[in-house]
Image 1 (spheres, rainbow, N blue to C red):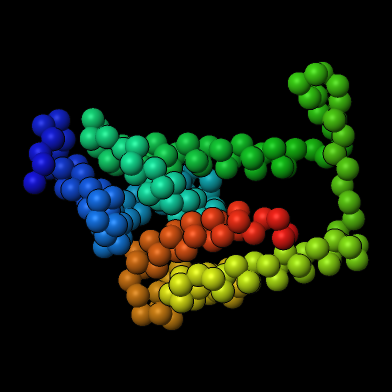
Image 2 (cartoon, one colour):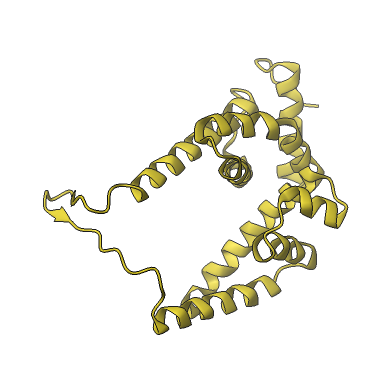
Length: 202
């Protein structure tokens, strides 16, 4: 076992999990990293956004981003420090975007050239063309989901089509909550890559 002098015992153990996740693509290592930090990340994000659903989704995103960038982690500092930074930065981006979307629609905005930008708000209903496009996007999305491995497909269908909570999915599939969340990241990652390849059809 590789020992890194500057890390605490807890951080040493995390580092071994990170190595197993990266080198052996060990799903149990991913799930264990999530189990160790999910609650503390969630409560930190809940304080930032003050909304349970947003905090839950942001927790998932934080782990998803961290797992995608795992090759960038170096044991100069604890994995938890690195993970919390990714989670808080992602949350700050989310808050900024949300604020940008909730600005007053009556006030013109200055763009970088100094001229005004007006926001045109359409009526709530979709016109026939938009309705058709939305229907086509949904059809393509379902086709893409069909290409996922069966276990990922079931997770995505339960979460995004049937709108089950993570707890309900864990109960339905008789899986630990950490496993459900870890596998949903992977499913979303596969889905994103498949959607990129299918983008031309949407």
